[in-house]
Length: 255
Ligand code: ADP
Ligand code: MG
Image 1 (cartoon, rainbow, N blue to C red):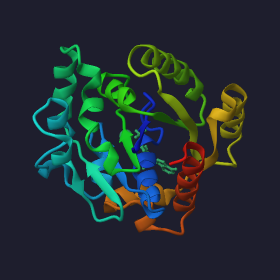
Image 2: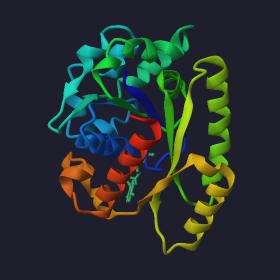
Image 3: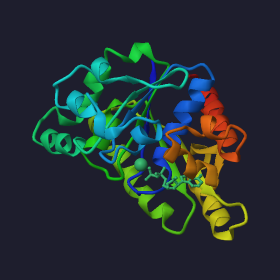
Image 4: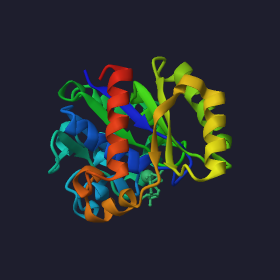
């Protein structure tokens, strides 16, 4: 059965979407069958993978509110071994609807039950808040991957996230595991980034992944072409880093 990995951090702009899209593409290249779920109403992952978010016949919204089976909301994209469950602004309405339900946080988990066996890994790109959508992702996940941008306020937000993970473990999903903290947009020449990076390792130890994603302009350019970094520029430092991340996670979580 596929491992479900939620890519989450309530801080915006830390590299969640960039990581979700490019990790999904890298795992596909390494012959893993991957489903990418866009769980952010901004639909950035959907657009980054080359799907028009304003022309969707179905999306994760219909799945969450129970109007559609998960399988029916999956779009096949051009990249090898990669499927997408897309999102757009409609998803905001699901967030509100689910708040009024007891089963609200477990909707996605239930919906994924039937399709998990079709994939080696399911990656969920979370919105930049600890809301009902993120709870759905964490309730569904075997592992959480936390992108961290090594800057001054990075550690502050992490304690709130760790508290949320504890709560999810005790109330929704006892087997949720931290697959790793991922340093993103890293610039080796920046002293502050190096200090924060060291502090992160001192505090979280082995939970910090060895792979570091460098700041790389090609990673920022790729989404506007609707391509993952592996299609856009396979020889860039960004592509090499995301392939290394995929390999590290395959080893670490026996994907
Ligand atoms: P989030 O999903 O956490 O809000 P994004 O993945 O959208 O974050 O990244 C925020 C911005 O930073 C985007 O414009 C993205 O293209 C850019 N970005 C992300 N990772 C990198 C990187 N390693 N190097 C350069 N730019 C990056
Ligand atoms: Mg995002």
